[in-house]
Image 1 (cartoon, rainbow, N blue to C red):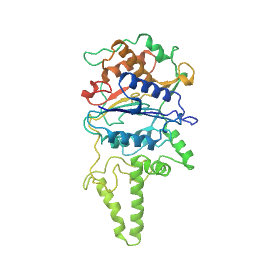
Image 2: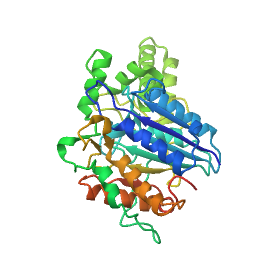
Image 3: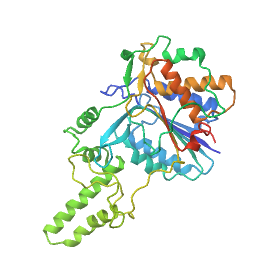
Image 4: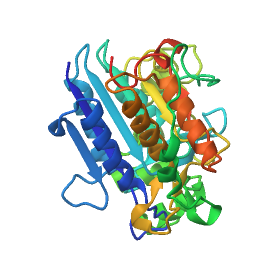
Length: 384
């Protein structure tokens, strides 16, 4: 069994999105993996946007590393992905709520749920994937149903946190003035893209703008939109000149996007105001609607419920000591568990129950969620 991890922290230094605790989260998570879960240092990739000695946690770098890790795994292996930073919502008329949930790499080349589904759908059977998303808008990133958390796994108990809650509180208690939330408002996200591109980016041109900035490494829906828009433009130009064969690539892509004919278009409509060309399907590929990840593929721990925000907390008042409430909660609960039960596993259900209790007792309003199959909820955290 090989255990590999990718740990990404984005503090966005010097930007309108700046946070303080994400790098600390990553260092703490690395220590947990090596001390308690048997990960070798060489099998943990760190991407920190404040440390030039690590690869930068850009959208392209994160996706490339995830693809590399997925390709190298085989049945029985363990894969762990941790992200601390902002989450955001990308306008998308194809989603039931009008938005795609996405994580925000340091360059704002967002990674949406569709991107993660595309990457993790290629996992070998029998690989145990755990994703911790210490950000807002992290629910449904793996397409799974939320597990109802009403207590620990049968036969397990939440560890006694005792004096460890002082670390979660920074020894001083926490109030709103010491918290930033890890939700990047859509308008701020658009403003940051506008600054990078040098022109106004709005809800109506967000996908074309992402492709202009990041090319083929941008989110796959944006790439698909750009490809199909180019085909539509070529088809229209050919039609005007009487070259009807020029319309064929565009028509084939539309036909494929509808599942090979007769079906509804694939999930993933245009951003509001953009032409209805975007499809969640690679043009030219055989056409069936994309399916969500099966529930048994991957376990996701989210920072909060959909109506809440995830805290970037600094109760000590020193930004160098800031942390994400979810990450620090996980660290607190696991530290207590392994102190009281050396070497014993803990289930995802019991861990999330303990983190919720710790955060509530420490004055945080967020409730981390667990999204996976019921069987995975009661399996051991990280390890088989």
